Length: 151
Image 1: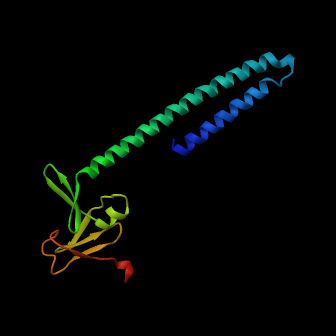
Image 2 (image 1 turned 90 degrees about the vertical axis):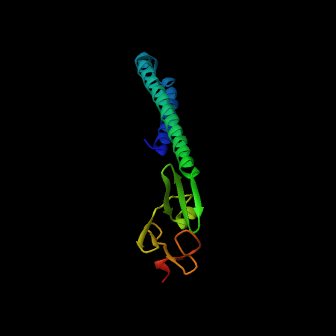
Image 3 (image 1 turned 90 degrees about the horizontal axis):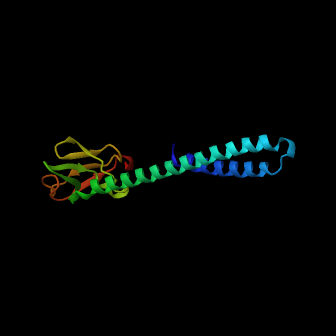
């Protein structure tokens, strides 16, 4: 169940409970006992549904916090060595990752793909990193970012 559905369910449950309470006081005396019993059952089931909704909300909040924690852990070992982002790992370094995506998409770690000697492509934003004479080996100086959509 997604968040909006859980919130909508909560509003519907509350409205149904209020409606059931209003009906309880407006039924003629002759049928009142039977209807009161049915309304009590309805109110009980709605209360159970509210408890279930609260549980779902707590689970959603816990999952959102876990996602945020994992994102913080992933970003914790990220560093910038011109012109790319890299990630420290036990076995060395992982990367390179697209600096344009990282800087514009909330720290997204999008892997670059080498398409020829020293030339790198981003499959998400279509940035192309081409070495310049001053660049030398990858990551030692600067690269020119080429966006094919700007041609």
